[in-house]
Image (tube, rainbow, N blue to C red; front, side, top):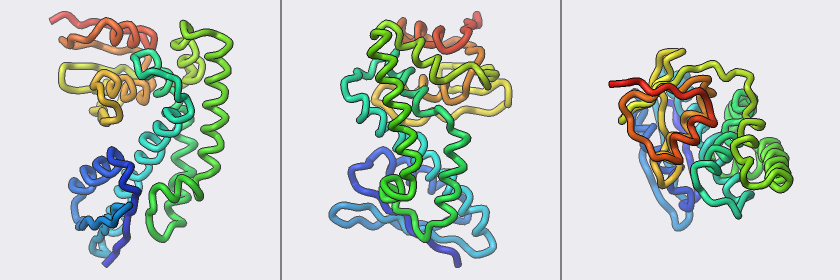
Length: 237
C-alpha cells in the first residue's frame, strides 16, 4: 500500500478546505484527518496498483495550493495597501497567474523529491526560488503603480499578463464558466469573499481573447473589468 501525509498550519483555512474537498473526489484514495494544536495532518493512502494515478492527482491539488492560494497570500501581504476592488483583483490575479507553466515545473520537481507534503514548510524552504521570483514581480508591480498612478491598474495588469497566449474564448453563464476553445469547464476557486472576484481570477487564469456573456447579470464594476481583460460579447437571450 502507498501512503503519505499532507500537513499544513491551521491558519491556512481556505487551503485546507480546498485540499479536503478535492481529496474526497479522488477514486481509490482513502484519507483521515488529525489535528494538533497548530497543524492539520491529512493521512492519505491507496493500493500500490493505483499509486501513480492517485499520487499525480494529489500533486495536482498541491500544485494549485502553491501556485494559486499561497501565491495569492504572498501578493496580498506584499501589496498590503491595496483594497480588494475589481480593478485591484485583476492586477493581483495577473500576478498570481503569471508564468504558471514555468512554475508548475518547479513545483512538480520539488514534490517528486519530497518524502511528505508539509505545505507551508515547502513554500518557506524548498520553494524559495519561487518566492524570490514573486518578490521581484511584486516589486515591479509596486514601481509601476507608483509611477503610473492608481488609474492605470488595468494597464499594469495587462502589461504583466502580456498578450502572448491570449487565445481562449470564455463563456460566462449565471452558474458556470466554460472554455469554448478547448471545450472544458473552468473551475472557479473560492479565493475571495466576493464571488465576482473569484470569477475574475478564474477568467484571467484562462488567458482569454474573448469573453461571451450568456444571460448573466454582472455588476457595473465587473462588466468594466471584463472589458479591460478581453473583448466582451453579450449574447442575447
